[in-house]
Image (cartoon, rainbow, N blue to C red; front, side, top):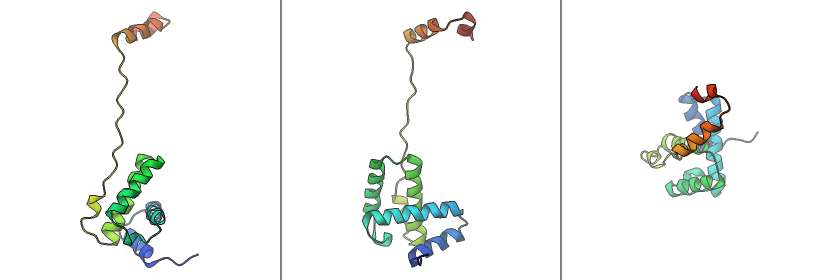
Length: 125
């Protein structure tokens, strides 16, 4: 197995001290390494604009909202805890899932729907 970089080792130690689950640790390390590979540079040399560009890239690829927010959590942890950048993590925004409005039937559509029900018992239930 390859030797861990000092930065990755530090992040894993920070997560272990905070008692993050092994699954969360793997997820966070994967997210930060994916971020680093996207730009081809060490993540400690990347800034807020790079994080924003990466978020735009992830949204364009169709990543799910929970997965996007997990990546945000990983980057906020990395910059806030591992690198100790005080206010930077709060400036990395979480994604908000668009709300879907329910379909509302018109009065005519409700009447048509109820007329399509075969039995009187089903209509009154």
